[in-house]
Length: 116
Length: 111
Image 1 (cartoon, each protein chain N blue to C red):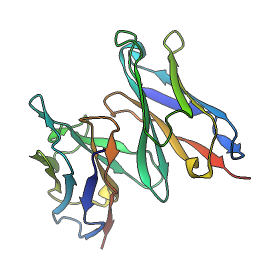
Image 2: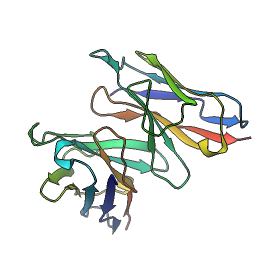
Image 3: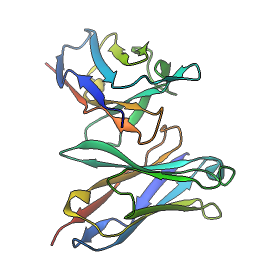
Image 4: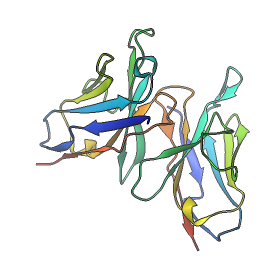
């Protein structure tokens, strides 16, 4: 079964950090670019980051809203993709999804709440 | 950034009747012979699921009552006969360039 499972969400204070993990299974992970998308009740779905494959030199791309604060990475030996989030703001509160490159497989989402 | 505009915001539907959702982009999504426009459905309490990719291709397992059409900047998702399980929020997304961007969503509900 093709599956993505996020973990690492939780409550964090403004200015704090959090690292989300996403475990992939059931497909050729190393051959797939991976994306992170978040969803808030107020702003709908927002794409925030992508990391390409080793063949494509693990090139990353970010939304302007998170550029310089968030870092996407991957470990192909563990079939894992990560999202390191620093300098968190209240407006980063959202459910975060990891997604396979063709957007045909989504995780169940991880809730991140930024509040004092 | 490419702005995606969906309409209507809300769509009450009668089971068995057709329904259409529209998506317009601020720039052409046509590149290398393809339209980089996807449609997703988010059912209540679930993650979004891919319905249509590259404008008109049904994803695996998607019923043939769902049809995507359009090119360039104007796209349509049509449901030929709405069923109760089709309720939820529908989103379009452009994938022609980063940042990938989504429409604001269309909530489909049964009358």
